[in-house]
Image 1 (cartoon, rainbow, N blue to C red):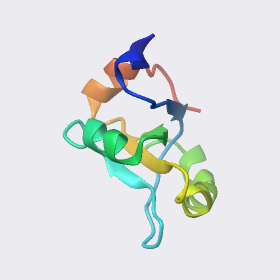
Image 2: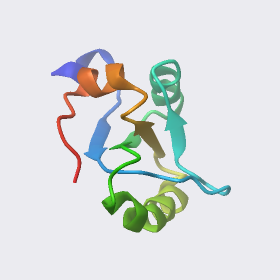
Image 3: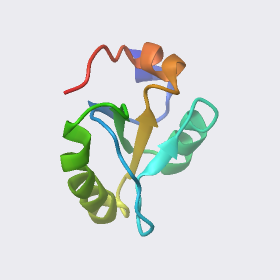
Image 4: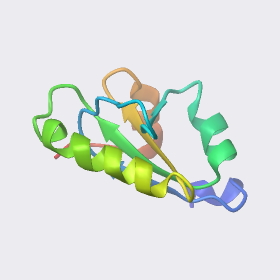
Length: 98
């Protein structure tokens, strides 16, 4: 399993869409340069992969932000811009968006 080398960490990868982040308890913006660091820092993360062309993203944005606020004490909530972070898309095998 891919995550075996991360000590006590589970990354739940959720394929989602465009996320426009708010200011309080906003989902973390994850990039190739920050992904592993933030995962190590948070320990547990709920990660969404999104694209800016997916219409479902607009309707999901408020719920994703609610999740970030509700879960901030327990897990990190972050998003990956799949259009800009192709290496992370390949790394986690993301092949589609809702």
